[in-house]
Image 1 (cartoon, helix red, strand yellow):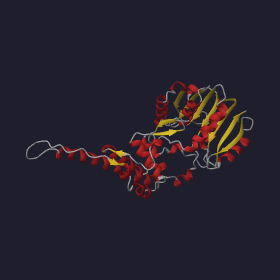
Image 2 (image 1 turned 45 degrees about the horizontal axis):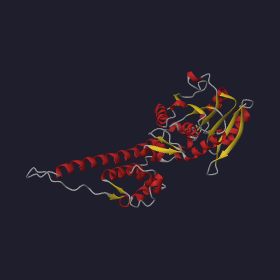
Image 3 (image 1 turned 45 degrees about the vertical axis):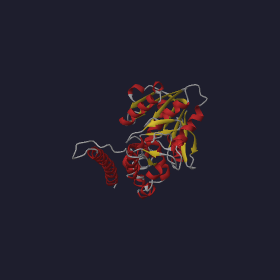
Image 4 (image 1 turned 135 degrees about the vertical axis):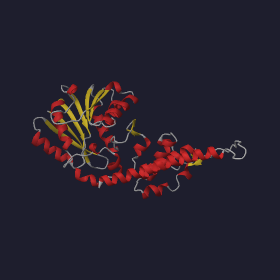
Length: 342
């Protein structure tokens, strides 16, 4: 089922982009030929195409987005308008009054919306995304951080803002959102990260450089496995803090995911196995070996997981790890847990 859905949606995206490229080349060649007189060989200068009011350009797109199953259409439109005009989101009026597209911007706007109707994630269309107080480059196949993760990072920051020095490890950093936000907010933090995806590893390092944080951030391409939790050069390292947003979606729940996720996201960053804790269990073992005594492990998990994690701590890790507490996100879901190395 997923393969069929993937092929279908990717076909729509490809078709949208192909139609745009064909239309652009046709317009270009048409303009070139129409400027020349076939009888005299003289060049006729026609006036440049006029600007188009954004209010006119967006007509009909709300319905198209809704028909495609895209929610929060006004937000999607404003994000794309802001990006096309190269303006900050909060400087663009909601009603788009006094805004205009030139012909090139109009073509780009329409191409982006065709891709969005094909359910390409907004973040991939734009190519960057704000996370807390930083802007990150995004890339297809690299997991897009969610708003709830911002809550998680803020919670960790509050707990470490008065600590003099923090040597931190992130497991599965993706684009680098969590580590780089921590580094941006807390100058006393130094961060190391591991990431199984080569593309994400490269992107995280690039984001660190773009933000000027590369001197306090290092990322290693490494797949965590039992008894090989960290790459060889980190085998003897211990940390004050470990953070992770490991895959926690149960395999059986994949059928309920949105097309944006199934088609465009790296599913390895989501698949938590039969109970959603397959990778988290590896992180528990990693924490036993690589946390200093008194060091903390912070995890973002599914809303049904904190009680289960508490039980696992009592049954399997007593005397090594201690369940400190769980925390709720903005939707009143129990999502975040804090664990201490004994």
